[in-house]
Length: 223
Image (cartoon, rainbow, N blue to C red; front, side, top):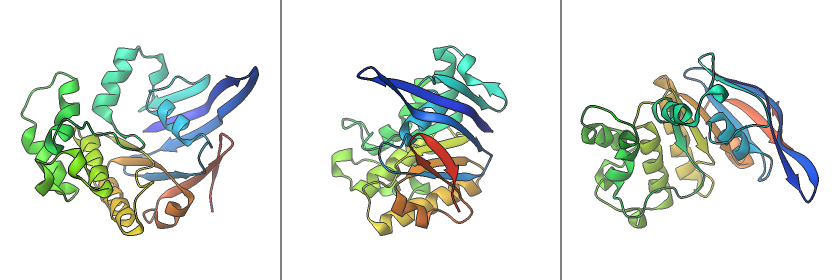
């Protein structure tokens, strides 16, 4: 489904050149869970942003179902991301002035679509276990509840690939376990899941997940 080859992102700092991501090769298949672990600054978020078409690489290719997304115009990439990709950014990403239901419905309205979305949004909230919070606002949610809303929102357009950047970074162990179980369920339904986590979270990644470690911009398989 998703294939990256030789993916590199070069930056300049005080006249010196360094690679935040350095020649990464990665594939993600339908229904597969791929976890990338590594310390802050290792290049994980930069890699995810390139895979999602949010950041142009210095070199390399990203293909989705065999198509080179880097050859598309910005509008085409945005349409692809809105229809094929579910994205959970790092940290708090909910809009404070929208209630939970409206936060989940939002991606549906970013592209012209037919149909009624409220029932689908309610079903996604039920899927992640917080249907009872539909009328609440982000300020009224716990950290774990907010992450579940972000997950429901990422799934609202039935994506083929879910990308999650540090989805459990500041959650307790019990809540982290619950979120990881949700990822396993989503993959079981056929949606590919690509996530980056902190080192400690890799231990409780869903059974069967393919785990990589990232350090200094390079990606390597992990035993």
